[in-house]
Image (tube, rainbow, N blue to C red; front, top):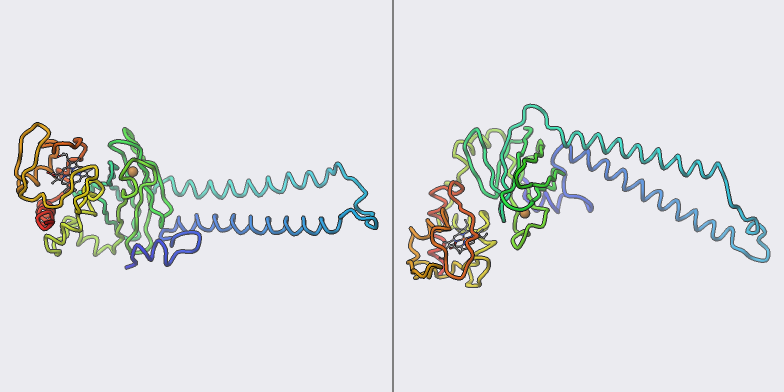
Length: 321
Ligand SMILES: [Cu+2]
């Protein structure tokens, strides 16, 4: 299974990350054709220019430089028609690839995607599985993402697949892909969406059909990792780190350092002990008790984290002394 680093950097070219869908290969072929063609034309023009500068240099002995040409029909038609033909070829070729990228085949597996400041949530409608910042698809299967935003404009970008589409509030946009390589891929948000934009990334795991079925059966849950370790993973995987530090520094939300079992001051003047139930409620329904000095901007994670995952986060917060 190829890692993110291999897919994005090591196994890519100087220009582009490693392609992992058929359409990515098609897009690259067009890109490299235009690139090297442009380089060839640039070099040819440059060399011809140089030759002319030398050949037609005005000197007392060079008589060729005397003739001043103002007009040449044949040359003008050629330098209009040839670039026109080249541009039409590029347009037609690009249009064909664009159609392939835009029109999904009829039998796709659909996943609902929600972009939200600052994480991605994925919903498998048939299986009833919800995941956060990580999703899984089988290899060699056409997959369609039906996407919407709950707040501002975000944008879904999977570099290895060469698919990118804005994710907009109040309407659905879609992208589709068919991964041809098993591996772990990085997903980015490519529309600046506020403070946490740079950490608004997700992971896409492409698995064999058998592994994918096993993942579905375990309901997409990680049941192997011990709780505190899982909690540490979830801290970044579920985007808590975009708003909460673990070193005492204040970000959008309070730091988690040493909050366990401490007395928390609420905005309404009351004081609450940060025990397991308080933490659980803060995650599932953050607006129930809002910490003093902070805006009630934490998204509710109800339905997005399993009980085991919430337990893991509580264990992790306990360990931050
Ligand atoms: Cu975003």
